Length: 94
Image 1: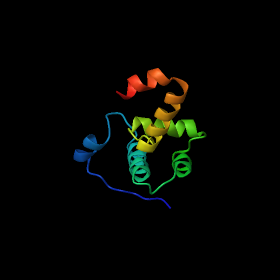
Image 2: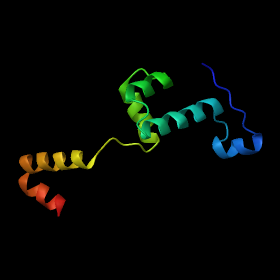
Image 3: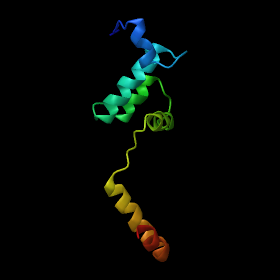
């Protein structure tokens, strides 16, 4: 399916950086928003944007300030640090 959206020129400059490919920029914004809202998976993002690897998706998500790092992940990392470096981990937590 092809979707066409008409955007008046006076608004385009507010949505797309000068010299940017409007279609690509708007597609990326829509995909980033859908991923952030958990409407798309990482694999769907990869396919939609034509990326070959997950690493390319990670870079894309970082550019859009989307990080899949939860408070539980942080706690697990602290537990690992505490086990590997007992004194250092305690100083980091403090």
